[in-house]
Length: 202
Image (cartoon, rainbow, N blue to C red; front, side, top):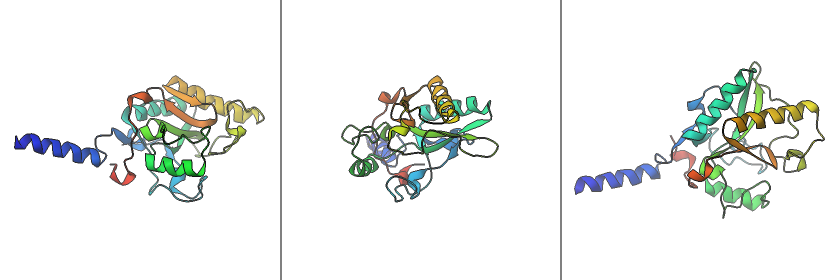
């Protein structure tokens, strides 16, 4: 009986530490993926550092899909750069307080796929230089320029946007109509919302 009690306590403690969440560092699955975690800097729509460090976490299966995208793009000498991935629910509440517009920020009452560790914000970079490919807008541009319907951009930017979308679609991600950088794992419903602090993740 004491053994069973010990096992239960160990499981609860592991979950509390983030061990039972199936979240993994994106770079542990594919080290070629670049990171530019904007919320670990002041270069984001909040104007302040929100995350304690520049790391990106996703569910294991979602991270493996993203690794497949990277491998696909590398055949064209292009790769991925991640702006954001898993986002604790407490941070979602902070974002909603600043930008309560569901076209761009999910209502924390409903939760975001970022909170499930099954959504990722990405762009394309050149493998040889690391330079970002042109896109119709910058990241976190909360305007129509970020929408897929926006066509008043250079042909190169529109082609790059399509390349990113089509490659992500091919590997099990779904785009968001109002944000060219945001993609959901099509299996996102399999995951619960989380509010595990980054400090408790491996």
